[in-house]
Image (cartoon, rainbow, N blue to C red):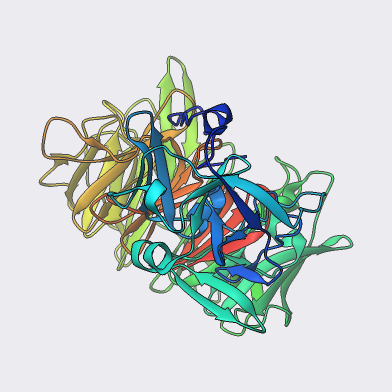
Length: 530
C-alpha cells in the first residue's frame, strides 16, 4: 500500500524512494492536539468513515485537515515529491484515483497528538514557512496533513468545499473523477461496454451466460440482450468481449473445444437485442453490400475470401480475389517448414479490399504482400512488393511494418511515395494522431514501450513505464500500463503530452468516444471516467 506523503514513503521499485526524516527526528518538535470529527465528510462524493479509517481526517483549531496519502492526494488531483535537498514539494497535477477507504477493524480515538514538521515545504512552487503558519501542516501516523483553509484548498488546489449543517463537510476537486458503476459483481468477469446510453455486461444464470443492458442513468433496470450456453469446465465463457465495429456494438466468445469449437460473433441492434452474425475461425469486414469473410481455420487454405450479401447465408456467398492466393495470413518460412499466423489487417475502402496475401499452395515464393481487390470487377492487383508483417489504413495512407527490417513505413494507398516512419523495430500497434505518428516497440519482458516518431535520428520515448496495450480516444492515446507500475493507465494528448495519470490497476478497459470504462484488477469492480 502506498503512503505517498508520510514520514516514511514506500513506492514501487521503478520509482525513486522518498526518504523523509525518521520519526525520531521530530521527537523534540511541537505537538498539536487534534480531534476526529463527528460530522460527515465527503471527498468527491465519497463518504469517509473517520471512525475506522487508518488515516482519518481530523480537526485542529476548528479547521479540518486532509491526509496526503497516495490515493487521497491523487483522488483530489495532487502529486508530491520528496528530496533530501528540496524537502516536500506538492503540486496540483494531472492525476486521479478511485476512492480508497483505508478501513481498519479498530475504532479510532476521539483525539490524538500530531506534530508540526520543520522540513522545507513547497506548494505549487511557493515555499511554505510552516513555523509561521496559523494552521501549519501536521504529521500523524507518518502521514502529512494539509489544513483545508481557503489559501490551500481553494487558491492552491482549486477545490470547492461546502459546509451544511445536515449534510456535513464536502470537498470536490476539479480533476477528472473516477466513478464506480453500480453493476452486478459478476460483470467484471467478462467484458463491459457503454454504448448509446446503456451499459452492457454479462451474468451467469445456471448453465447460461446472460448478456444484459441497463440505462446509464438507471442501472437497476436491466433487460436481456442475448443468452448462450456456457461450458464452465473449459472456462471459455469468461472470454466474452465487446467491441465497436463501424459504429455498431459487437460481442464475441468461444464455444466448444479448441479444435472442434468455434468463435461466435454477435451484433446488438438498435432495440438492444442481439443475434449471432458469424461463427468459425475467421475475420470479417463490412462491405457496401454485405460482409467479407476471411477464413482462418486450420489447416490454412487458399481462395479463402468470400463476399456474402446482406441477409444471405454463408453458402450463398461467392469467393472473391485470385484463387491462387491465401488471404489474411502472415507466413514465415523456416527451411522446409512454413508457419502461419492469422492477420487482422484486412480493410474495406468503398468497393476495394486491402488485404495481406501470399501465393498458395506454394508459399516459398511471393508472400506477405498487400493486395487490392475490387468487389465489383474482382480485379486483383499487388499494391506493394515488400513483404510486410501487418498493415493498417490511416488518413488515406497505408502504414505497414516490413518483414525485412521490422521498421514502420507509410505510403499512398497505391503504394507510391514510401517513407520510413520509425527508427526502432515497430511492434503490433501504430497510428497517426493529428499528423503525429506513434508506435510501440517490444521489450524483453513481453511488454511494449510507446514511441513518437520524430524527424530527427532518434524517436521520442513517450513514457518510461512499459505498456500492455494502447488505444485511441478522440485523438487521445490511452495506455494501459504493465502490472506493478505506480499508475494503471496514462492518457496522452495528440502531441504526446501527459493528460491524465490514473492510479487504478486495470484488468481490462473499454474505450468508446469520450468514455473510458475500467475493470479493476483488484476487485473486478467497474469504474467510469469521462
